[in-house]
Image 1 (tube, rainbow, N blue to C red):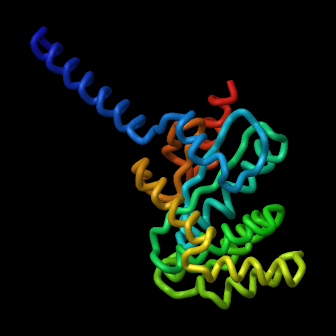
Image 2: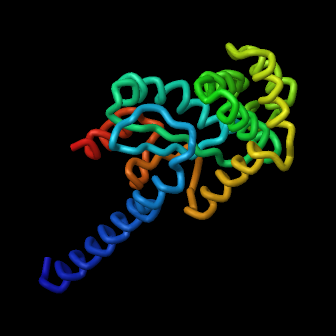
Length: 219
């Protein structure tokens, strides 16, 4: 191979490497800014490493993450306070997404200690078929009432949650819409999406990749 061809090949490799690195980092977000914007979101754990999930209760892949990846994260990093985990709603599926987000925020406003149980109940209520999760109507007012009644709360608290949930101009509705606007402002490219100290996790459907990203942040 002559010198000219070698030079051209090196230039091509350089361009490919540049774009690969650019694409790998283009969705990263300033960590301090994102953490300040999400400081009042529902959270678990108390570590210095902040993991923020953008997700949608109506999204089938978000449900898969919740069932297959999140429990492992909780066991290895959240329960022992190595990381703090925060959740932000993205309303990609219209009215049903908004219902889930409003209901979850209503629970968090009235009984924050019951938020994560309600969060898990919502995801557990997804239909088994991925197509049905996104294409059938299942996240209804009746489901919200049913799940609220399953919480270990007084009747008064349950009534307050449902009243907040139903109020189109109430605090729960405002917070649900604010979540979605935050995702839009940062150009969150998909759900579910994880940011670890502002750094986007590219392959979050694979637990090993998520684990590696967290361990890199911890070190």
